[in-house]
Image 1 (cartoon, one colour):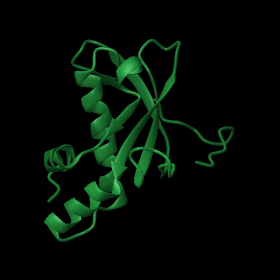
Image 2 (cartoon, rainbow, N blue to C red):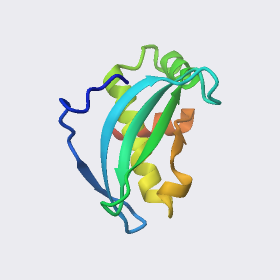
Image 3 (cartoon, rainbow, N blue to C red):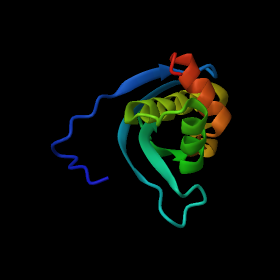
Length: 126
């Protein structure tokens, strides 16, 4: 993620989670998961998140290659980059809705086959 922070304008977005917290987040970037990571091989989507506007922390959403390959085989076409990003963002939103303490328990999120199917179906992707 070679991003020049001085020149990049981040779009801070807001999401009201079902647990009652209002999160602010922005997309930092994506990269191949490190080889030694438990989820590798995967694409890692990184978001910076805050719920109090004081402390910002990184959240990684992993989309394993085996999950992408399984979806592609079932649907007879590859996932587009936009669909992959959308699935990562929806996984982040699900964590916002389900986790009481996002900072303690939501820093590493994984997209499994069922959640990928559910996320893309909610967007009308077949």
